[in-house]
Image (cartoon, rainbow, N blue to C red; front, side, top):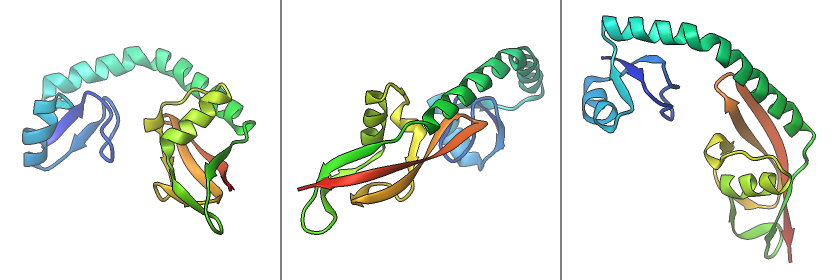
Amino acid sequence: MELILKQDVENLGFRDDVVTVKNGYGRNYLIPQGFAILATASAKKVLAETLKQRAFKEKKIVDDAKAKAEALKAVEIKISAKAGAGDKLFGSVNNADLAEALAKQEVNIDKKFININGGNIKRAGKYNAVIRFHRDVVVDFPFEVVGEK
C-alpha cells in the first residue's frame, strides 16, 4: 500500500514522503491516526505541486539548520550526575538531560531530535549523540558524563 506521510513517522519516513507499507499498518494505524493519506494519482499531483512551491522555502530552512549545526560544533557539554563506586551512575542520563544541558548553553533543540547511541547512559564517560536539525542535516555530537560523589 502506497501512502503519503502527513508528518514525520519514526523509522518510516519524513513528512511528504511516499512510502510503501503493509496494508494493515497503513489502514489500521497510519491513516486513522492522521499520519498519512492514500497515495492516489491526484494526491501525488498535489504533492508534486506543493513540493515545487516549497523548494525555495526549504533551501532557507536547510541553510538555517546548517548554521545551527556549525554553532553546535563549538559547544562542549559535560553533564554531571551522582555516581557511586567506580563510574556507575545513580539513575541514568538520557536525551532529555542532554537537551536541558544544551538549553543552558543557549542551543535549543527538542529532545525528540536527539538520539543517544545505546539509549540511557548508566556510566560516566564520553558518549556520542546524533542530533537531527533537518532531514538533510544530521550531526554527531560528542559529550561527556561526569560522575560526582
